[in-house]
Length: 121
Image (tube, rainbow, N blue to C red; front, side, top):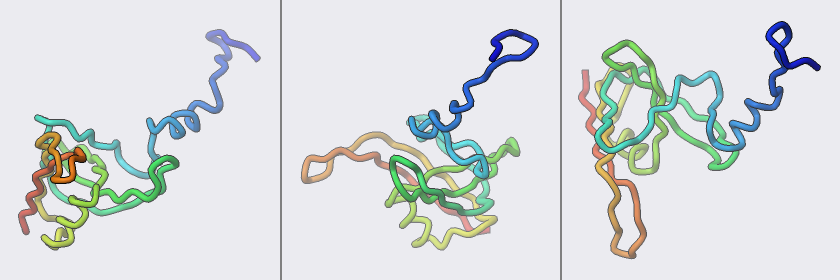
């Protein structure tokens, strides 16, 4: 085992460690869009997918093409998933997913509040 420029030794478990830490998703999906206040996701729906996350279990996603042409995958929580179904979101529709911030429910628990808009094309 060498650790020099001619034969660099890489951590062969790096990818698995990243998945275990929740830092990496399966390579078949585009990069995951980060839900952040002030960073809305706006684009065209290119498809829907799902994957099994080691820590969080089954995850639904929507694949969106941004105005720049880049593709991202947004993980759908229950609210967003239900909203996509209610609005009959389909490939080709325009979508806005916007994190508005944290809210408190009537029972005192905190949750992320989203704005979801689907425009049919």
